Image (cartoon, rainbow, N blue to C red; front, side):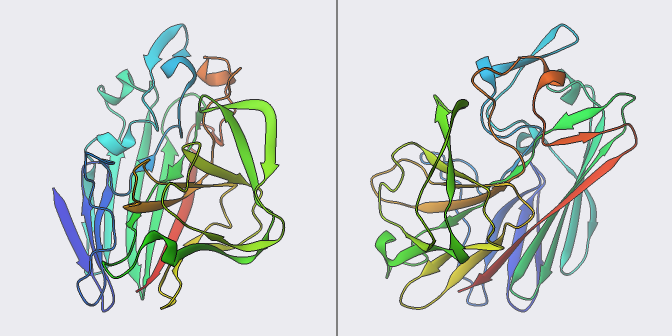
Length: 292
């Protein structure tokens, strides 16, 4: 079921399936969020949990039992329960159950909050370990926005902007898994990355070690932008589907990376971004500021 909240500047609609944003409109009623065309990419803004990217061999092992591991986890594909809805606030919750434990054999509570504040969407995730054992996991945000913003522009009319000059380090992969090959520098002391169709040659760019507080998608002639806070995230992924003409663009703040090429299949041996003891909770906020 879908629920809508609004303020003077933004109207936000969220689906209980995955607690996923499915629409963000500005004052003029213009749709900014990618509308999940399944022929291109069938999501709009999923949250990735309890892992980001791919798992080695598409599975993991807990206490000798194997579990299938689909790309980006499963929280985006389960129903979340509406907890609270006010004019500019909406909260959903998912609590581990018998079905989810077939995918991920741990007990946890996953709470998703959305708050509209001026031109910004504050998207908060709270994870609480209600199990009797430690809970390790990864997490990432994956919002996709229409690009171009309107029919008057093309992909080349946009660029990615860092709020301070960066020498972005790109994490290298082998068949979408981390390797010991390390990384390479995308550019020295750059503030902008021009966009173009067929921008990605290797599916995506995963940056690590950014010191920038924000990363933005900017329209050259108007200055319109979608700005993402990234200072609390060790990784930022840039991605769009491999289509001849760009239709949307994702700036994705991540806490974790895809699995390592040489990673153990055993869940408790993996390099988790977050490790919670029984009763502990973790909180993370993603903020997007939209001025169009």
